[in-house]
Length: 63
Image 1 (cartoon, rainbow, N blue to C red):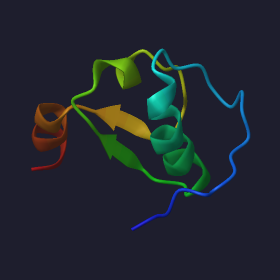
Image 2 (cartoon, rainbow, N blue to C red):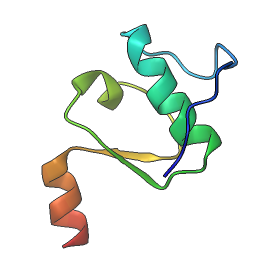
Image 3 (cartoon, helix red, strand yellow):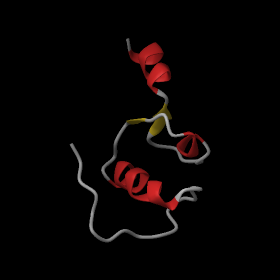
Image 4 (cartoon, rainbow, N blue to C red):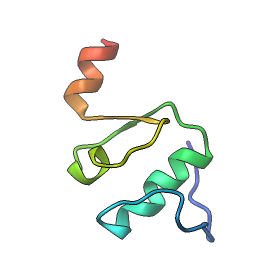
């Protein structure tokens, strides 16, 4: 379990929907390995870590 900080640095990455910024920002700073989401905006972000997977991609990869 990780917690989103009250203050975040901007510009760490670009994402279409700024409401999604806190979610991915937290995953990055907390060193999360995998972010599972059905939100297509996350798939457009170019980052090294975490791996961003749909629920189906997660199941195929890890089960």
